[in-house]
Each structure stands twice: as structure tokens, then as C-alpha cells.
Length: 310
Image 1: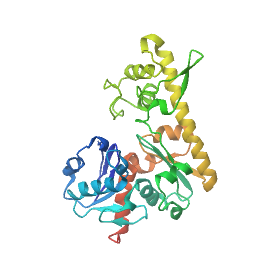
Image 2: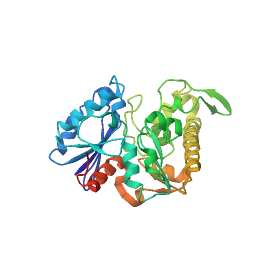
Image 3: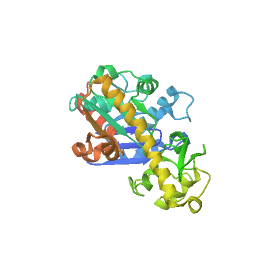
Image 4: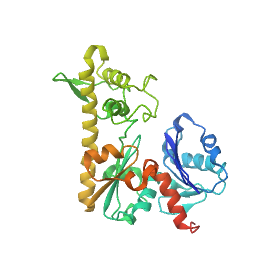
């Protein structure tokens, strides 16, 4: 069996011995079935969040599209829902259940923990202390409770995190253009390599440190030649500080409310989450599966269910 996590930007696939991450921008009508076709012929368990892409008029339309695209390749696919059960056809309960299946998989392994799963676009903060409390929780509700922070390692626009930055001691407003993204800050700071910068750059230029510094310079309507490398690195540090503060605040809130005793980090940003906020990197326990946790989790939960889905 394989596990499939269909997000709005990426499709993650967990097989028996590997993780595959495919860039699949559903808002650009990416060919989901074509991406899945090489994996045909295997049983598949699926979870999704891509139904919220703005190419769909509604979540129901997005769910139907994803289910149809998956079933074209995997006719007997099982889809995990927000009720914690598997379904065989389009259902409103399938919306944004990828975080829940991670909790379902981990709840017996780490019952007193909060999971912080930092992906390319968002960071999930999931208390594992009471699984029944999580069932049916929408993304709207998760935003309200701090369980979802719309800030990720790669795709988040810099202007959504900082309204101003200090340039040589002078507070400077930033532009609201998408000149730079969090991948640029993390690339400049050495948190990621060029190979780990897996999303398109805002200017379609290269993924080098200097190119990221140039994009960060544009956030203050300048360029790297004008403000210099030190100032550009300063912008990168301030962006990460703002992101770190935002996530840490919500993590503290969730830990206190749920009386969780530990933190585990997962996703492509697990290393910097562990370094900044403490806890344990789930990669030490799960290896490569940590980077595509919902895809791995939906596979494991389906195998655990052993055909008892509705």
C-alpha cells in the first residue's frame, strides 16, 4: 500500500521504502492524475488539503476533483476524513484531514506531546493529548485555536511576516509585493540548501544565497548593491525572528491549554523547529517519513485499520 497526501502545492507519496514529493500547484490546474500514474497498480490510502486551492469554487468542488483524479489511477482508493474514518467517495468530511491523520498515527506513541509539523506553506501545531477533541475541527477553527499557523518554511511571502525591518538602525517599511518568500530568508541563513528550495523563486532566478539576498533587498525597494550583504542578511534574520516568534507564541498557548509535557517536530522544517523551540525531531524516530508525515501516517493508519473502513 502507498500513502498519498494531496496538498495545494505538493503531492507527497509514501511507498514501502521511499518518500516522493512532487510539486503540484492545484491553483494552476496541475495534472494530478498524471503525477500519480507511475504509482498505479498498488492499493492507496489518501488524505488531502488541496481542495482549498482557489482554482475551485468551493471545497466540495475541490474534494470531488481530487477524488476523481485519484480514483482514475486508484479505483479502490481509501480517503481519510475529519471523522477519523476512511471513505470511498467524495464527502465533505474529507476536507483538510491531513493533519488529523498525523495525530491519529502518533497519538499512542506520544500521548502527552504537541506535534509541530512545519511544511512549505503552513505549520500545524497539534496536541496529541485528546484525539477525540480534534475530530471534525475545521481549518477555520484551527486558526482560531492556534492549531494552524499559516506560515511555512518556503512559500510564505515575507510581507506577511514583517511590516518593517531595521536597515542600519533605521526602521524601514517593507513593500507588499511578493519579491521574497521565507525560502529566501532560510536560504540566506543556511537553514536550507539550494536543493531544498523546492518551490519556484519569486523572480524565476536561481536559488543561490546571493540571489536570495537580492530578493530580500527588493522588499525595501532596493537591491543588493544598494544596501549591501550585511543589511540583506539582517532582513533575513528579522524575517526568521518574526516567524519564530509567531510559531512559538501559538505553541506555548497550545501546550498550556492542553497541559502537554513535550514537543515533537516534523515536516521539512523540523530541524529548525527543534533548534529554536526544543523538543525532539521526529526524523530521529521515523527517518525520511517525517518529511511527508501525513502521507506516511495515512498509509500506516489504513494498514492498522485492516479493511474496517466504512
